[in-house]
Image 1: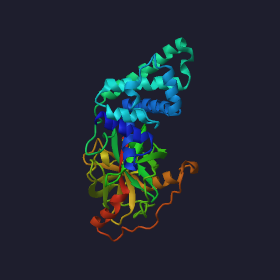
Image 2 (image 1 turned 45 degrees about the vertical axis):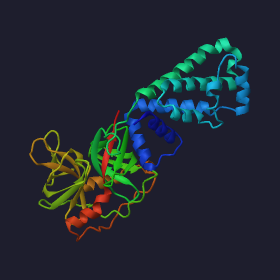
Image 3 (image 1 turned 90 degrees about the horizontal axis):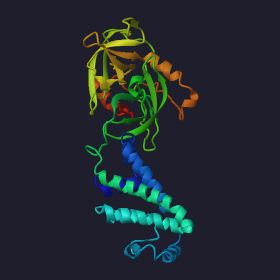
Image 4 (image 1 turned 90 degrees about the vertical axis):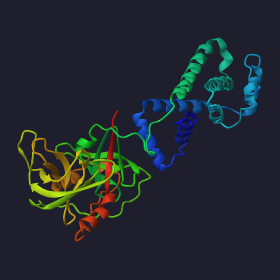
Length: 367
């Protein structure tokens, strides 16, 4: 991204002019790029200073009083009463960094003139020198920052990726605790590539469950969730499938329930999990485990390191318990679970078509 495009993007961000998708991408980039974040802060401070200018007539009077000390004739024609005049000048001279630096220094001088800063010239000279140096540093930083990494108009990839699924139409999402643990920010992305910011509202590390809530004004209602959450146990040999994001595109995998227990780290039986035989990769963590009748019976959680092809899913009864244990003051909107299963009687292909809009890629960003 060239320099003037970067500055334009920062300006639009600070002015609240980015649309929801641009804002989501930009916020993701801020989390990853500390240099950009510093430039945003420096630009904001600078434009805030510019906005303090008074009337042009008063400014010109002050400039005339200091005409013998500062020659402003070469730049006077560029000045307008609009508080963002420096940004316009930068766009005109982005290929000439030295000129931009001179304009920045001139802007600081004019601000000091308007505020009466030169009433004690000798004392304020050192402070002025420091401010000019800071402006120069910002300009030099913009000069060296020539590009922002992006592919297919998407921002840099997240530090970690998993899967999540909706349990309500208004944006409550289930995933694994280990997926979002220690995250600085968490976003979900649907099958169409649209991203939404979320917040973590509840976690249960013991059962590896996390509940997220979409916290993004661009998010719209998903409509009625097509599955219900099964309260009872499922049986061995039952056909099951999962949908998730082991890669950038959504993936469907089918198999069967191979055991009604899992394993703990010390080889003890784990009654909170099912063992399932189906293809699961790291990005599937947090995905839904669905039976042939369209009931949610578990949450994909782990792959066995001791048994080839063995994977585990947290039982749906423990998910229901986690939902019930969410403190009421953690919920900013109602969490109403669906009690009607509209997947029953449909083929797997038809079930997938109805389910895919309720399953998301979970993108986790860490410092």
